[in-house]
Length: 121
Image 1 (cartoon, rainbow, N blue to C red):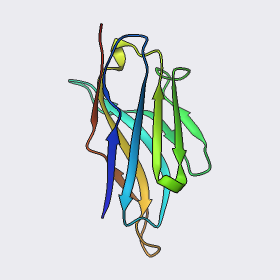
Image 2 (spheres, one colour):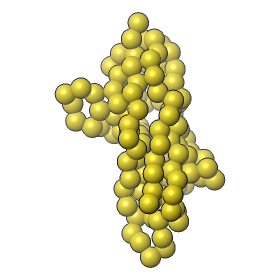
Image 3 (tube, helix red, strand yellow):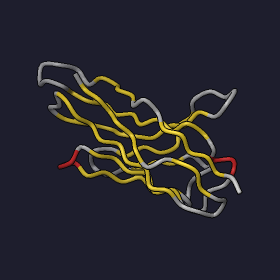
Image 4 (cartoon, helix red, strand yellow):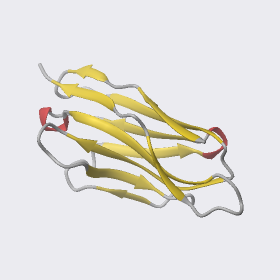
């Protein structure tokens, strides 16, 4: 099986920064696209940023210029550096990855359990 575990969330003041990490572990043959999504109270889950295996990056308009996504392929880890945080960024953040557990398998989407980010004075 494959597990994604997020860390680095918490409470931060407006204008502050957080660095979220997500480590994939388990049976992993290869990892394709990785990304971060978020969901605030009463809202649907939305895409924040994605990064492909060849480092092509995409960001939502609300975070572009403030957030940076990166990955360490050797460590099966994706990061989200979130700067100049705003109260509107408050949400549960979820890691997502397309993982091929075995060369005979298709790529499958896996989700982390989610981690809380609260931006408040």
